[in-house]
Picture 1 (cartoon, rainbow, N blue to C red):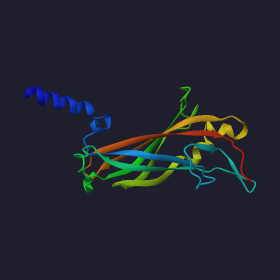
Picture 2 (picture 1 turned 180 degrees about the vertical axis):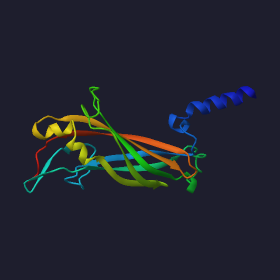
Picture 3 (picture 1 turned 120 degrees about the vertical axis):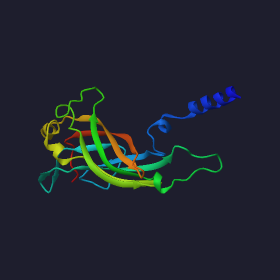
Picture 4 (picture 1 turned 90 degrees about the vertical axis):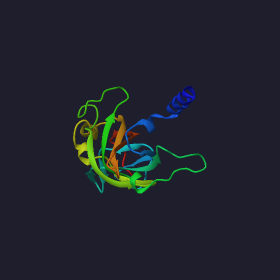
Length: 194
């Protein structure tokens, strides 16, 4: 009897993934999609971003912050028995209240202000009960006026990065939750549309 119970416990623990073991909350977030859009064309979202460090508008050099949107899904750690799955309760809802963007380069040169833009934190509020989509700033306008992006205004160089975005929040009982997504961001002085 003891061996059978021990075998069941071992089998159950092996089948649990890392997501179900993280944190003490009964629910967790996944990112279904993460897309970005140039501030100069804010409705054209895509899986990656070509971030123009300066855009000429009516003959005037202009700097736009670049936008992004994220779609979250809330999942339960205990999904319930097959054929009769559990459904989220109001306590399972997760409120995301901030995010952090860090830029990384594949070549390992990741010094903020030298190789990549400075990381930053932003305010963000959305409550996810089942699914939710919300927008946020991915590239701040001021980053385009600071090193290393400011140097791109007068040359044809490109800095290719991966933007790592981590969202932080809590479930309705106060347990902390976080989830991270990534997307490609290339910075340059790209040609402006007519």
